[in-house]
Length: 101
Image (cartoon, rainbow, N blue to C red; front, side):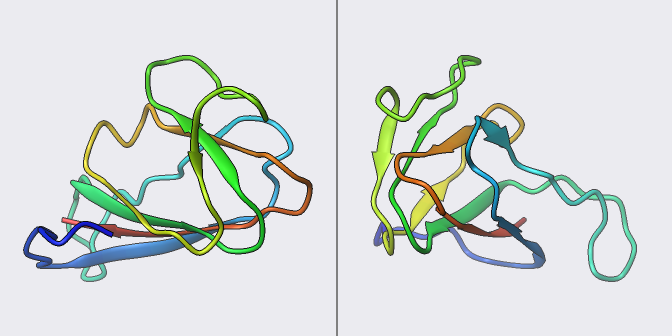
């Protein structure tokens, strides 16, 4: 994980994705824990059990094409969270995501 992590002010939520057999995007939280409207500015994304691939260029990744992300490695992603998609390289991958502003 990057050594220049942005200052974390509020955790907006957590998501676990367990079906990555086809390309899947993130479900972004729309409110803060206190109920205010929000838009996450970055996410910490960690594959738990198997490697995954991701793309954020409006093209779906495949099991063999896309940026590889190894199980146990955390991706600090601050691009357009509505465009990033993931797919498993091997069956039974899980993805853990925490959203921040």
